[in-house]
Length: 469
Image (cartoon, rainbow, N blue to C red; front, side, top):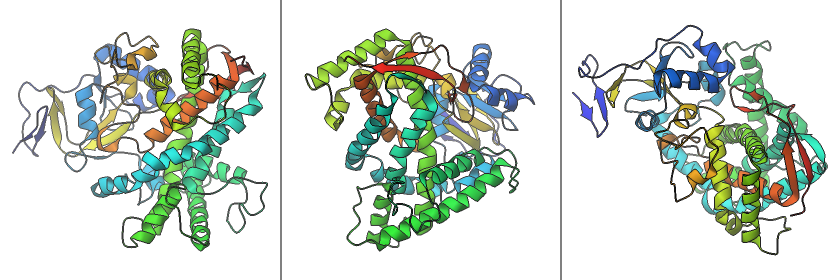
């Protein structure tokens, strides 16, 4: 029996697809995984130019269909519990842990709704002074020199996000910061996180110090122990927990209010780790791309400066950008979105079909894997006018490009990124402080780390000098 919506047809097991339905072009090749990991941008662009926005590959084994069209993206993002399931490598799923949003799709909406107050709305607005302070203090050290861009941004990003998500200070000069915890310093915590992150993409599920997965699992266990100690210390403090203080506090306050609710101790520990995992490297890589793109296009740099002048007036030497300031930065937001369009950090969804599906006359067979790729969606002329050009104006109301399922840097549908609003706030504040304090020049074309997250390589430098703004 068919279950049909306006643009999607589900097929029962054994049911034949309509005669006019076609399978995606291209035959999977044994070396597709190697080519994709080596350079996802090139892999997507070359196949898009030859086959269009939907094509078959052998990436990560089996038949994996890359999709970029709006209707195919919508189908990929919204199939949980109906016709898709999560399709990530076994090593990645193990690193997520059983309490992640990915492991229990039937609980996804409930858990995501419970987590959202810690990363949106008034709580997120309350994080803005901290975000301002860390960025302002961090980039003050950049003056009049060449800096290695990614390491400098990565350090500040970690200092911003760790207190907000894990609920712990990173002040090493205070002897009480790590007292009684199984991690003794900020450097040790950051190193554990780097090892944990690398473990998500280990190719072999072999728990050995010789494998990235094995080292990652060991780091994960240490981080779970660390979060358990942080939670114990927080609960031992006098006074009521302020749910808007940080992400951890929001979950602990909800747990106290409803002990039998969603927030078990195990879920809280896991979710703190995963939220930092999902935010830190993506934001670090993306902010570097934004700084590079703004430096590459002087006319955009000047227009951003003009917008700052119009918003701030005479008060153009400040160290705190308010929520009201940030809301008015329309062209900066458009520039951020155009950077996400042209240099998306990663694919946004990987799903396995549990039923065969027909969408727009294309048959997607049960058992195939789907990958929704912004590297395809964002270069389609049907989605963006002259997509090869860097034009922030396309995201202004007059042009109104970047509509749902065509612009997918943060995914879409039920699996839209939980931290998207925080990423936008951090990048706006970062760019605003840089525009206030510095002029900068790029030093040629950067090379990128391509996988798992696209980011500028550590050795790329920009030239910084004090601003006359």
